[in-house]
Length: 605
Image (cartoon, helix red, strand yellow):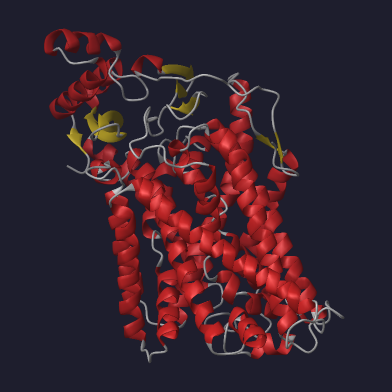
């Protein structure tokens, strides 16, 4: 099943049977200044062909194989459906200027998300045994300069791995639900407690935590289905709403008053509501037969979400006039419930549903981003590789969970409410658009490279026109925010210069690039060493690369004894097996550590 209109299934038949990988299955393909490995995981019969500097393929996922088609749908749906669809419609309407254009923006947002999703799915088909989505796809699209993109993206991912905005929104609605007075610090305290609980729910078991996320996802789905159906009932004239068609008679009235800044701001809010369409790509190595599963389930989740978003907006516009939605002190969803069901129990019920929706979003984001952080650690470009990579003792990524929890708590407590909080939210979005542009461009580079190397078809290919649409969409989202608002340079969402978050976002990425240059280029030159990667085992089935410092006078020896992926060559493995009696894979890890201790200084030790 292809993802129309953006994807095409290749003529290659689905591979049957199972593939049991081992160190013997890993071969190195030399391509001049780059080397490629061909290996596989137990989750897929398809081999993963990747540049050798990337994180090693884990032949058996240490996180298990608990992600099926239903979980894929709800991982994506739960990340997309947070609190945005309940609160952003009024902002989108304000930026669009008319009801008709506001609805059209939600359709445009779907096509933009769908085009990028087709890029993600093609990457997934190339690397079916690698989790982490962007971490892997940037690493493999741009393998040179060596370790540049892994380092820059890893640092950026760590810096922005917080979920403070949704945690604070959850706290706000908990206070509304309790009908209690609140202060900024009370909300911060509840937000910290809520995020701590969300983290603990995922800490002790992967399978059951996914079941919990699925259950909350079902509640979110039912909520939007209910709002959509209720909106159709309102349009039918069977509720107290006197004129449900008032916003649809001249739906595009006011469009001419929309500004470029307003339109861009509206589209940014729409895309923020669609963010998460790619979330399941973060857990690919936990999905059996991921190409076949994600090919239909990920697009189904996006299409379902888009239909529910549009129906929800139609419902909001049917219950209240344009002026009421723009001038109300409550969200569009709250206004809808008040108009249709009254202000007592209905409003309370909505708050319960929004709280559950926000909690589900926290869980889905934490699941996806923890895998991204773990994959960054597996690349070897972060200090303390074992901390990021280990899944002991519960079979869950405790290191990434802790980092996300700690940074989220800091970002909840440190920034004051208002401008600083809004600035941080915008700041986390802009770098994502930069990486989207790189990914959409990178898929064309990866295609060409695989074709030149005569790698076999992957079973999935996005339409080239959709890739170009993704490139143009990403360019627009990067360029348009620089256009000033009509009210002046200080007339944006914050009281200071409107494009500050764009400059700071670029500056942070540039700082990550400077860190790379210092670590990879300058320090080795001063220290008379070169960085090399070695393969390490961090317990159970978890493996990673670790970058180590090799003195220049030992480089030739190191390169002779190790292949491009960091594994000891078979000659040394055989000698070690004869002397120690260990199996081949264990011998690689054990002797690799001995070599590191003898001739190199380990990074992060």
